[in-house]
Length: 80
Ligand SMILES: [Zn+2]
Image (cartoon, rainbow, N blue to C red; front, top):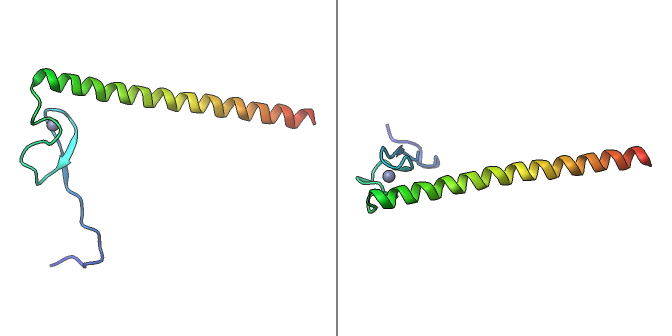
């Protein structure tokens, strides 16, 4: 049974067993790591980890700023 044409195609992807990143199922080799040797792969994964760490700390920083601003708004609101 063909799918109706107005539906977007379902993106099939699978997780690479070597680098853990997702890539289209149709690709025979992983585009992220197939051209890397083990040392390069490790460097690549370290880089990914560093990115996720910095994203996480940026999230916490934003939350802290939001909390401080909210606190200021409450204090100013009570003072008026
Ligand atoms: Zn891979």
